[in-house]
Length: 155
Figure 1 (spheres, rainbow, N blue to C red):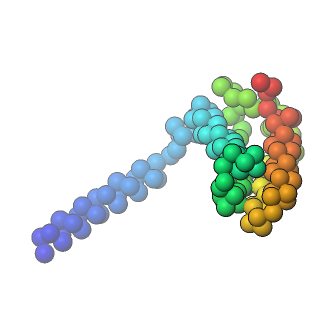
Figure 2: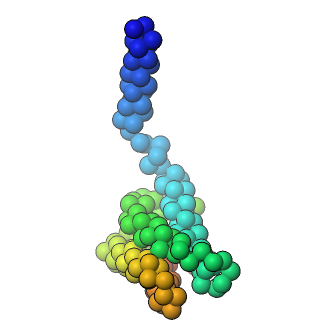
């Protein structure tokens, strides 16, 4: 009985600590520098997934069965895009242009276009038709450019 009580106490304590941490305001997490860092990681992940897809299309790897999963990951990343560009996060070490917030509906539409193109690529990946995959991958590239051209600083 003592062990169970000690275990129950430890579990209750850990739960309380966990809930306290989770319920704390995320002020530090909302600092522009942290938002930008997170945003960059989402974009790096999207770039890694499209790079994986093109490695198959170029014949560098034979992981065609991974194309759909990589494409779905891009679609998931695209769904996050509006959330990772909150107002006030355009100042600092970022390539984001003010046009994002000045023309928010166009920006949201560009993110949605990427999500749609990525889901089309996932469907092509599921089909195994390499010609369809190549065409759909081009659609993802076009959708990326549809956001980068008007909303990202030139490198």
